[in-house]
Structures are given as C-alpha cells and as structure tokens.
Length: 158
Image (cartoon, rainbow, N blue to C red; front, top):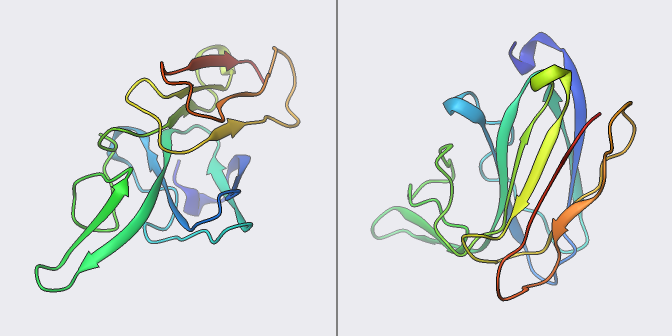
C-alpha cells in the first residue's frame, strides 16, 4: 500500500544530536518509493517525524558533510555517500564506513523488527527506541559510539 493511501502503522522520529548537520536517508525496501525527502538536512539539535506505511521495510543511515561540485554536477558526502551523485539513494545503501538501521514493519507473524549495524564501519551514533506497540520484547538497540570492532543488535516484537 502506498503512503498516499493514508494507512500508517508507525511514526519514526529522526533527531540529530551531533554538533554538525546530517542528511538522513530512509530508503524503502525493494526499490519502492523513498520514505523521506532525499535532500532533507537535519541541523544540530533538530528533529523530524516520518509516518511509515503499515507494511514497509527499509534502511536508514545518515550522511555527513554533503558537498556539491557544480562543475561536474555531482553530490558527494564524506560518510554515508550512496555513490549516486544525486540526493536520492537506492536500496543498495551507502559506502562504508556507515552505521545502518534495517527494519520491517508488520513482518513475519505481524511483528516489527529492526537491527542496527556498524558491521561496514561506523560513521554516526544511532539509537532505536521503540514506543507503544503491544506484545513481544521491544528493546532499544543501537551503536551510539565507535566500538572499533562493530556492533550488531537485533530485536523485534510489537
């Protein structure tokens, strides 16, 4: 079901607690419509809320230090760059190092799941803190500092 249909199951609050601007990417699974405006910039201390479709999957990561080279017409980011040269990023994801959240809403047995990975390197602290829902054990998961060996936490239930 498309977001335009008006059926949503979750709200995702993205907050920038860094001392510099970040550009979050929220790519929907399977190459579907992006879940977030591709050029959204979050200033330090600011946040935004995104409504997610009832059954959706995707990846979330942050890009840092966005620059646009007007002579060649390409965008690049110091970390989290997806290699497209444009604000839009595909499902495939970002070039390492990057901290990534993968999620699925209303997945197997109707449960939501999410995993935070720094297995391809670490660029930003990310913490997922579920609120509301019913059933299952919905615990916070994340990599909030560079642990130099990567971290991977997975949880589900809702």
